[in-house]
Image 1 (tube, rainbow, N blue to C red):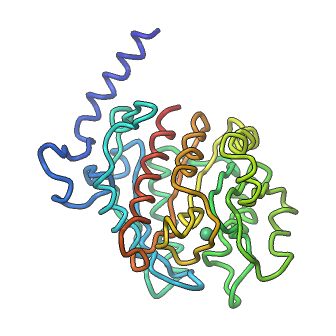
Image 2: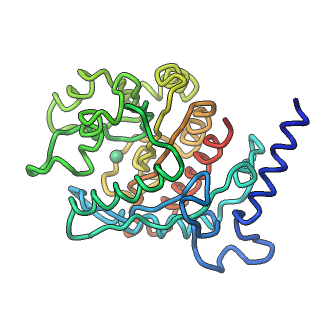
Image 3: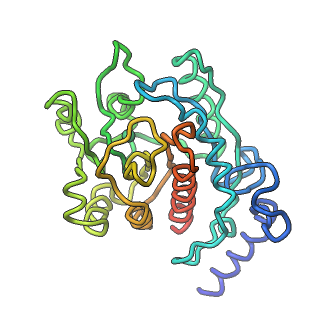
Length: 306
Ligand code: MN
């Protein structure tokens, strides 16, 4: 059994040869074209996991800038190395992974951008046979629930995506948990929609009390073995650590807690993941983009470990 596994690993390795990060022993990390994790540029049908950017912040109600996130995360991800230091996993030896570029967007038209982004992801999903049958589970790290109904009469913006996703049967609210939620709200009823739908909301206070192990044990039980999507909003982190984001809330999680949380996703059937809201114009040291790039690597490692 063990031998078979090793052979499979070796076969995979050989078919992965062209999808390896640029060797930092040959090309230093500050040189070369900045792709995600220094991977080759690839077409979606060439890879098992596509890394893509969505350089768009058109639905932002306050401080913009996340449109620059994908490019700066590509830049900071040049510091990402090959092997996870705890698990020993080298994701690039297990699957074919590449940078499949950015979704096409129109910076002056939110609805047109939603359509073109959707078409872009539909192509990836169809090509990789990841078509989803029915609503999926959802593990959401964020300071915000993002289940408002509308802002300024607009139902599609950065505060409403998961309400729309529940309404459109994309997410199963009974297999949905939001972790790290905090900050003053504009009305005491703001969480009613999510709670009434059955979403489990873990405020930062409860997270602090229980810790990553306990909260993620609950999350794993909640989503079970069926397909689950993961979203990591960088504003889940404390703004003293990750200031480069449009809607910061104090009292957030640390990067160490974030790494612990993501590692505890291990074994869950993750069909896709995102890392959002990194805003380089608000991130003078690049630390927020570095945290984002590193958490992308952590997510990749748990996605390939199953
Ligand atoms: Mn947020």
